[in-house]
Amino acid sequence: MLMVWAERIVTSIKMKKFKDPHQILQIWFSSSFPIGSYAYSHGLEALIDDKKIKNKNDVKEFLDALLFYGTLRNDYIFMKSIYKGGEVNELILASAASKERQIEMIDMGNSFRKIMKDSWELFLPENTSFIYCLAKAGLYFDIKFDDLIKFYLQSFISNLINVCVKHIPMSQKDGQSLNVIFINQIQEFLTHSDKLTLNDIGTTFFIGDIFAIKHENLDSRIYLT
Image (tube, rainbow, N blue to C red):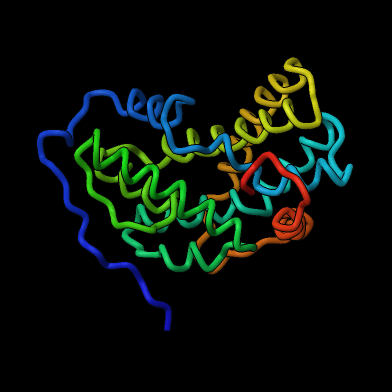
């Protein structure tokens, strides 16, 4: 039987209400928000080192697969489930394709949780995944799911584009062109994802998962995943 996380979340009443949720999201997904997302490549480093990804078109193909068939599709389902009252943290952690992927989930979650505790007076359970913490914080601060998921997906993709700009390397122009392209790609994904449920959790983006595992055995590496 699937175990669920049922720890009570402690909050402070005075911090709960803000007039503009978009200001909150701008802060949470800013590069100055210290959760360390820049340290993770989600397996991209191994793909680049193996010459599987060499240019802008390769990067777009990778990110499309991640969004429509891989991690980001699952993240959408998990976060929507949390917004509907689901307690799915253990299922989120169990979905990690490799040891490093699970470490990425927990470390970023703990970093986010610490900031919420220290600066936002919101207390979240320890050793829970980043998207679990993010969704719980979004609920607490009355942020609409549609707003939170758009910011999350764009931030995740932008971070990986930045990895490619630095590590392939790829031009800044190509990087920004990809950011623009994925505004529409994200909207297309969201348009066709409304009926997805926990029964749809899974991936067909196997090369991404395989190279996430291969990353653990790279002789030298810059990124943690």
